[in-house]
Image 1 (cartoon, rainbow, N blue to C red):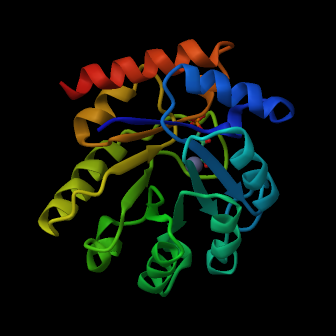
Image 2 (cartoon, rainbow, N blue to C red; image 1 turned 120 degrees about the horizontal axis):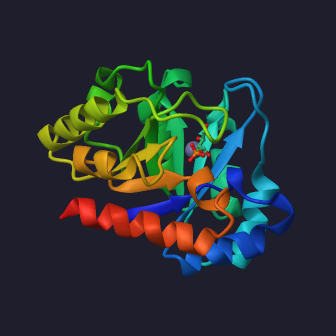
Image 3 (tube, rainbow, N blue to C red; image 1 turned 30 degrees about the vertical axis):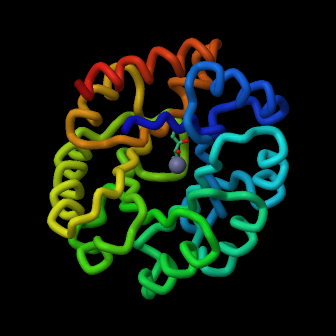
Length: 221
Ligand code: DX5
Ligand code: ZN
């Protein structure tokens, strides 16, 4: 099932309530929240207090993408603040199974994220345990980057891996998703679609969200 996840990284931070409401009217299914620490990625964005505030202004699930070096330290706080999904990068986690188990124990959906250079095989042993897999289709750190075409093959490989493990967990794709790339990622097997600039950089988040979701739904048929 297609779910659209607008990334607020591209939104007007002084006007988040209105931005999210517009995306919701356009059919957003969950709100993607990019947490960056200036270490794992070069950029710094937002943290727990913002998630707590968002929880009060939207009933949409909050999809928190942790691009930080030590996610284990902050998982409790983000889930306490209202995160419904928490995704963590395999590149920083030597005890990935423990981290995923902890996220699920705290009542959130657990996702694992693969950078463009990280092999699909790195999640082979936990393929039965994940609630979703996030395939980065750009190098994390910034919005508005160009989609990396090799991500399509990777989405297909992750789908094969999950299917072999008997896990129907959805694949989320993040980076450079717009009207020109959305059909190909859906065709490759992605179901949760993150989009920042394509929605909040468009001048009309409601219309942009609806157009993207309609195009994705058409590609699914
Ligand atoms: C990048 C973030 C993305 C970003 C996507 O590091 O993880 O979620 O906001 O932005 P667009 O859709 O503009 O590529
Ligand atoms: Zn993200």
